Amino acid sequence: MSSKNKKKKSAAREWLDALVFAVVAASLIRWLLLEPFTIPTASMEKSLLVGDFLFVSKMHYGTRIPKTPLQVPLTHQKIWGTEMPSYSDAIQLPYYRLPGFADVERNDVVVFNYPVEFEYPNDLKTNYIKRAVAVPGDELEIKDGDLYINGELAMKPEEMQFSYDVLTSRMLNADFFADYGINPASFMALSDGSGYIVFATDLVIDRLKESPLVTTVRKRIMSPRGEDRIFPDGMKMGWNRDQYGPLTIPGEGTTIELNADNILRYGSTIKNYEGHEQVEIRENELLINGQKVDSYTFKQNYYFMMGDNRHDSLDSRYWGFVPEDHVVGKAWFLWLSLDEFESFFNKIRWSRIFKSIE
Image (cartoon, rainbow, N blue to C red; front, side):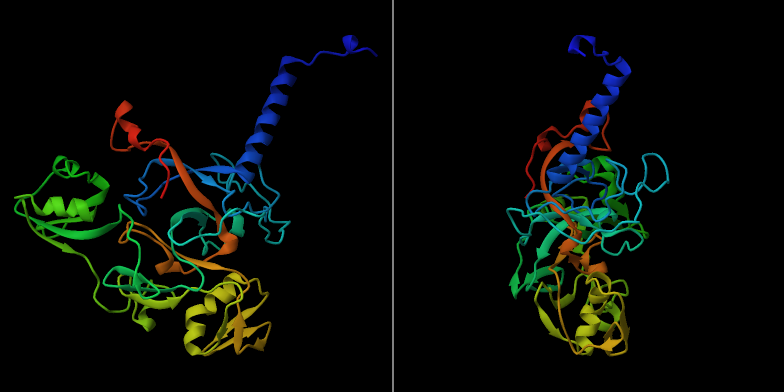
């Protein structure tokens, strides 16, 4: 039959073919190269702002082969607008990552799967974004809120924030704080009416101190004592968000003696992320598949992630190390930024568009 006699595709069929092609192309780009991500919380402010839209590079660290291949294209955990799972975990593939052109380096801003969300497969856990403040082999310690890596004061991101008590001579309004670049989500009144808790950078705090309406400014640093939510056991270790460690970050090939202290520090990591069928921790012993183990060699690299908003970040201080097989990619650049507290065209933060992420 000649090509002239072939039946021409209907308009509906052409639209369907175009849609299928677009979905396949978008899925491949999202899997292999770039994935869009939105900043949903203030944990990285002011480095990254709520309402920032960015691209995550899968290429830098190497693209992961999907662990859960049976999934509706362009979804993550749920089918859009429903509570229906978008995947089946009937097939789970072993972890493998294509070659990348960089390793996760100290101070990279990284997107990863939230490690302790155990109800989902690794690659379908919620995406988080933090800064990799420590990499395998690093010894991390926090003293009075200051981060030290291998005994030296760590790099401080230019836009890093802490929380402060800002005492004032009278009540202030949102316009006052807006003049200092402090949005309504970054301050709250103290219960006794004496002032405000403010999340801000050092530069903003220095400006606030010059205001005649501000009488006292104090950084909210916790004194040395245990905090019950802290990893691995804040109360037993006597650690909190501002007084933490020292703690060494494990990596592939790192061998540790499984004494009582190391079981406390690393036992949950071995149990949850090293791929063993059965790990039991009882008092000062660790058993793998029923056999007591006196030393252990880690199978993969781990990272310690922290938000740049140091007092408003749920990070590795609270839930522990991020395994290499949970790393999604490197935060690369912003393509849009919207301010939730503005309206119409003022919502767009024009100065942030196409800004690279450091």
